[in-house]
Structure formats: structure tokens, C-alpha cells
Length: 68
Image (cartoon, rainbow, N blue to C red; front, top):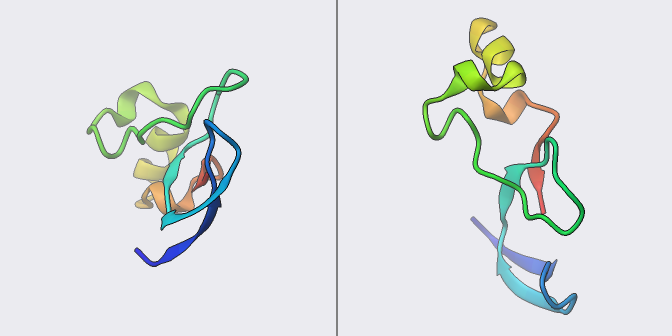
């Protein structure tokens, strides 16, 4: 992954680091994104992952899988 300037979610400062991706579905305020159900092989417990899996797609096609 290329390095880029990102805002640290804890301190708010801009830092250089690798791109970070995570699931942004159902996050509470201040909560960091989670790992994807595809990564932990638990697509049955995520409505979005299950639908994508049935369509032959992966987490990259999910609207909630994005940079943070």
C-alpha cells in the first residue's frame, strides 16, 4: 500500500502512513472501522457481505468498505 498523508483518528494530527481500510457499517461516534466479514470468513453474519458473496463479488464492492 502506498504511503499517504492521513488524519490520525485518535489525535487529529496529519501523519504519513499506509492506507487503512475498514468496514464503516454501524459505527458508533468515535469508534474505528472494523474488519470485514469476508476477512474473518463470516459472511453469513453480515447482510451486505452475504449479498455480495451471492453475487460473486468481494468486500471491495461494498459501500461500507472504505478508507479511514
